[in-house]
Amino acid sequence: MSENPLLPHSKLRELHALMLQCRALERKQKSSGYAREALLAATSIHLLPGDLLSPRGGDGVAATLAPAAKKYRATGSLLDASSLDERLRLCAAAARGLQAAGADGVVLAFARAGEVEPGWKAALEWAQQSQLPLILAIADATGGASARSRKRTEAALDFAAMSRLARRVKLPVLTVDGEDAVAVYRVMQESVLRARLGGGPAVLWAVMTPAGDAAKMRRSSQPVARLEKYMTARKIPLGR
Image (cartoon, rainbow, N blue to C red; front, side, top):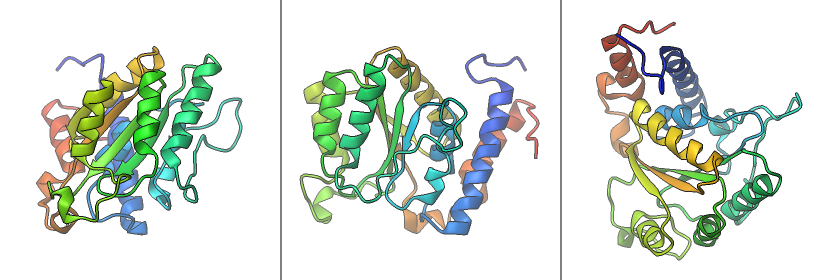
């Protein structure tokens, strides 16, 4: 089968290996109750040296995905904001710094639906108005639960609030199956290219299996198995 130039076989094998790495770390650290290896791998794989990554506070798995810094420095380009109250404002400021420096770098921030992220609306509004290279990947494992069923604050990240903001400021919000690595890869690929060319920010709203159901997920429905099925159908060696 001929290769897709936007997703060549070598990149699929790299994506598969990165997902296995993420899954192993997730199980070792027990950092989440849902299968997010597709979301972590298929977004971070697009980062280049000099790009910045901001994990949620205390998320050691996502922190390992930070890209190398430029000029061969040993440390990764990581916005470790575990102690900050307004993390996404910091991400927007970092994106503004990249923009002002004339770099083509991007900032990738991870968040979780239903949690409190002070300043997220202001940060995204500023990012859109200034066309900043910021991408926010939100994992939504709420199972469509109404925001009214949770403690509601102005800082809570939920789809209804995000949709209202998106309509008001014309912010791209891309809903994707967060357990389909190929779908996440393609949405992220488009968003990163757009951001690097000065097209501004984007939000990836990744719908996930709720934590309570993820443990019961059949193996064939798990993210790694879904990617392996996709690769096998295309006769692409898995490379394990």
